[in-house]
Picture (tube, rainbow, N blue to C red):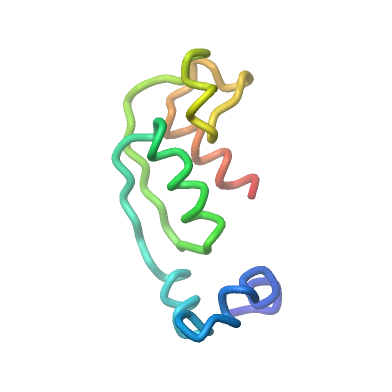
Amino acid sequence: MNDEQLLRYSRHILLDEIGIEGQEKLLSSHVLIVGAGGLGSPVALYLGSAGVGRITIVDHDRVDATNLQRQIAHNLARIGEFKAASVVQSIAAI
């Protein structure tokens, strides 16, 4: 783990239940999320911000204005984009 990661995940590392070893496991883990809607989009954001190393998102639907009040990974600028691509952009911005 580099210095930037140590700083970023320092609050996790301080927890006895996680520590450096646990954070390294998160950084090397892979998660599959099926659906980037009301549940999948916040889950993806939380997993990305927690340091999960690889996240695969499967959703063939597109972002619609009616999604925005409950699907927090999407925004007005992404209407019409595939939800999976929209979530990837949101995670990258964290």
